[in-house]
Length: 413
Ligand code: SAJ
Image (cartoon, rainbow, N blue to C red; front, side):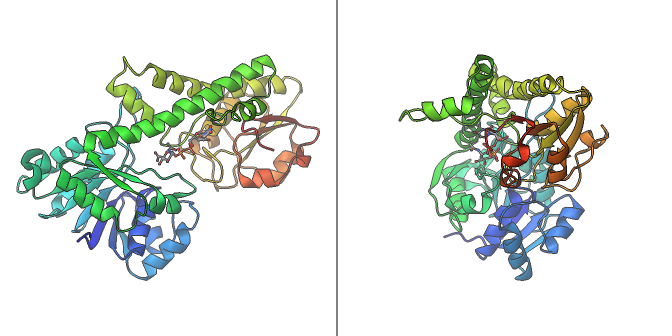
């Protein structure tokens, strides 16, 4: 049983907000902390600032019941969860600035007996660093890297593993890995997550937990790279890659993933670099996968250029900007990169469709692009470039595309 009655969650984004809502729904008092005033206001109105199935219903419920409220500054609590982004710098080295800022924001309100859990994906060693940062801000308290099991404060890493689009279900059902800086730190975090996790909770040390999370996303990146590499080879050979993969996957020990326009999102396109940064010499396969997946948008642009060359003034409907189906998240999205490159290279008139957003990213508006309506864009296009397999596009059916050149990066329709 967890003695934790209140949790401060730092970072109310794609992970922090759903985690807060689920804890609150299980009776824990949640103080959500975010640096963005608009995010804080919207959450306090019971309105999520991100799109995720069921999140709006549950958020409204826990805000109305008073179990969750958001603030700009940290307040005292029994435990803190840090769920801020960990981007990389231009040289692909991990950037821990958000974690450091989050740590410094909670340091003044820490009290003896608190548990701090890092949920953000982080390079190996980050949880130790977090403990050191806390210690330098609060010399009056002891931390596990100094005092081991006798420390005043417990520190653990519990990497998030949920799939956008299925976050609320996966939060509860998925197994969790918890790496404590000491066994008691791990146990305290395990007791906390057991409040709502119905999957297994596996205890290990913090460094193994950090590496496990990076490994999961690097595994997926490498496997998607295999599918993307096959798609390029099949294009050269005149073979339908989706038929090929369907056939190969009939083998009981073969399970090839789907090729696409590239790999996006804030996780799979980012996390493998944290392994590379830790050991560049021995991470050749992981680096090759990154190169293959990052190269795929250029291949798609070449396909569009070739198709466009058949028209005097081609009109190209670009369907979808999100990094994957049925989400509103445009971060690291290959679809955005592809549209950007097409505009930069002045390939045709672009009709950009993304039903999940109201405004285009700045990089695209700066190129004079605007959002188009799905039906109008498809109707008036010579070339239809399907970048994201959103349900809306699939519902449109194949008939609407008759007589048009279709470049189908997702293999659906
Ligand atoms: N993609 C393909 N082909 C596929 C599968 C995915 O091209 O067969 C592309 C998607 O279109 C997208 C990218 O890969 O651009 C990533 O999508 P995803 O659905 O594989 O994963 P994410 O980024 O939404 O979430 C991943 C998940 N990690 C794993 O499945 C190992 C999730 O469980 C993690 O919690 C999340 O990263 C994270 O936050 O780290």
